[in-house]
Length: 56
Image (cartoon, rainbow, N blue to C red):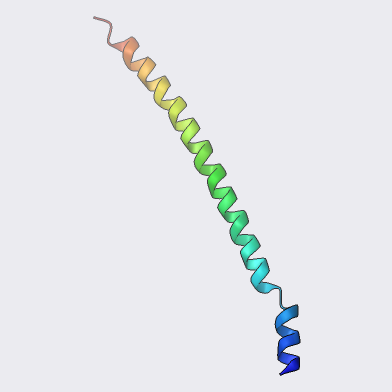
């Protein structure tokens, strides 16, 4: 039983999985932020082009 407890305390694979999960989450947030920002800029460019084409 003591051997099992010692192995459990030394096992770090769960902590590593949590760290990888946090890193993946932060990367996802960064990607979402970047895509949202670029999408807003692209929308502004297309609106400007559409306004320029509607000269009547």
